[in-house]
Length: 320
Ligand code: DGY
Image 1 (tube, rainbow, N blue to C red):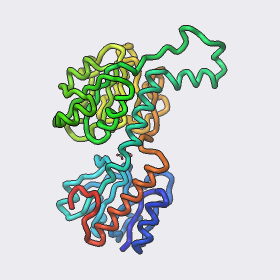
Image 2: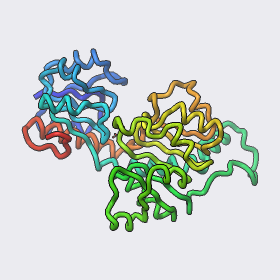
Image 3: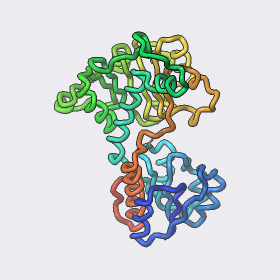
Image 4: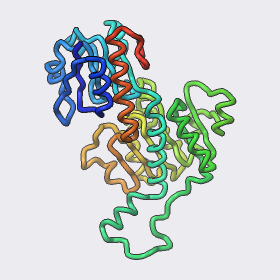
């Protein structure tokens, strides 16, 4: 069995492959392989351990007919044409659960940083422009007692809600399906339509997967519905938000700020207008980036790959 790992991953994942006696090759570049490079590099491979930077579609599968498993080291799988894989009997695996708490933590880091203008304030100290304590300096918004709107109430959305209890927030959520009354009671969360959530929330945080239905879910209309001076947080996928509409909403001052771990495009060019908006924090898609979580993701991706190659049910597959 021979597999290709499309970038260097934490050792824990490689050890799983070694213990199973699986021969692997790691793409040596710091940047993802181009499609042509991947096809060349993975020729004859039985499995791929991929990242969200690789597009796995019909054309790639045609070019790599020996591949039987695609194991994505991510919970999201919008980079994979799962139907095309299923049609060809290629097993697709992902790494949910292990990153839930870390991603929820980071969502809170962005919420707090934007609401309290942490980056702007820290930059002023570093630049030597802060001179003294000021009664009107860097005034932010309180999270305690505010209304938090969670769009997408899956594992990560619920983990974000759990943390909101400690901040005495009113939590609204919207999703395709409503949670049981026990879950709603436990998380003190109220199910509302998207429009109501946008109109009533001081902070709106996005936790939906990227699908044809959620692409540009937050566009000009939705941003206009958001409460004046509210905050938008996105740790899901960039294309869930219409970037140009967001720039306009920030420039007019309708939104107080935004915290974006994901963007469209990703990465943003250095001169992108979003990066000129003062109260916008853009981070490089790092919500799951803790040492422990990335090691767990690598391990689970490798466990999935090994199981599927050995013809056993992988721990987390989308189409086994
Ligand atoms: C995922 O897993 O889908 C994240 O975006 C990266 O951790």
